[in-house]
Each structure stands twice: as structure tokens, then as C-alpha cells.
Amino acid sequence: MSLSLPAPWTSPKAARLMRLLAARERPRTSCSFGGYGDDMTSWSLLALRGAFALLFGFTVLLWPTASLPVLVLAFGIYVLLDGIAAVAIGTRQGEREHAWLWLLEGCAGVGLGLAALAWTRTAVELLVLVTGLWAIATGATEIAVARRLRREVPGEVLLLAAGVASMLLGIAIFFMPSTSAAGLVLLFGTYGLVFGASLLGQAFRLRRGVRRVGDGDRHFRAGPRAA
Image (tube, rainbow, N blue to C red; front, side, top):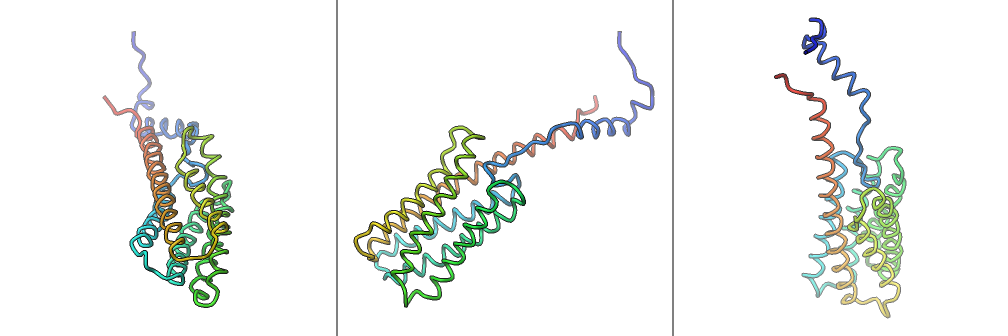
């Protein structure tokens, strides 16, 4: 025995109305990934930060004869671009948790980058020490976000690896017996490769998650196809 609905309830307009009502009751899905956001812009900005770091790391390692002022200048350009990207990520978060950390990290990077560009020839050693402080602060920020991310996505370690790499760079700078170009080439180059690869990997994981959520939402809104 089959039940049939009155004609008004079987019209296309009625079917669309039912889908809209169901969508209002459906809980919204989220793909925040530890505060990086649930849109395509957030993952692309994170990937951009990773690309900047990889480019910096490769450039430094392929230029082992660079002088100390040139290395600090190159690092200043990199950290300026990274800071701008971090500020952009923070502004995309609105009132979400950790948004202020991204803004703080980004502003610190922009400030360090501008200082490196302005004072490279006059205060190289001071800039190196400030770079160590920046690296430790950046690492602490990434680790804080990684801890929240691991609660949402068990087994996630890429962002944690980026934070650890940054903190190790800062600690190594402070414990260097002398500020030498050769030592900074190895430190900066290794840091750029590890930090950049970790952020790129995290960015593409975020991209896959955003697409899965988007596909699920589109499938739901489409509703069952008419037989």
C-alpha cells in the first residue's frame, strides 16, 4: 500500500521549500583546523607562507658564500612577506580563537622585516639576536595552535613540526658561540626547508578538508534527484 500526498505538496515549489526547511535544521559543518579557518583563502595563505619559507631555505643553502649582512637582509625580506601572510590569516579569522595570535605573529614579522631592511649595515648582530626571539615566539604560536588542532584531528603533527623547527632556530641562534655567516647559512637554510615543507603539507590537508565539507554541503543542498 502506498501513500500519496496532495497535489500542492508534490509540486516542484513544495519540494524546494522542504529542502530549504531541512537545511535550516541541519547543523552547520566546520573545517576550522585549529583556527586556520574553513575557506579556500585560508589554506592558500598558509601554502603561501610555506612557499616563502621553502624559497628562502633553498636560496640560502645554494648561496653558501653570502656575507652576514646579505643573509640578514634575505631573512628580513622573507620574514616581511611571511608576516604579511600571517596578518592576512589572522584577519580572516574574525573572532575565532587564536586569531589574535596570528595577528601578533604577523605584526612581529613585519616589524622584524622592516628593521632588517633598514638596519642591516649598522646592527647586524643585534638583528640576529632579535631574529632568535622572533623564531621562539613564532614557534610558540604554531605549537599552541597545533595542540588545538590535534584535539580535532588526532595524529596531526605537521603544524607542530613547524613550531618546533622555529623554536629550535631561535634556541640555536642564542647558543651559537659566534655570529658567523657559515653558521647562519646552515641554520636558516634548514629552518626554511623544514618550516616551509610543514606549512605546505598542512595547507594541502586543510584544502582537502575544506573540499570534503563543501562537497557534502552541495550534495545535501541538491537533494534527492527526481526519479
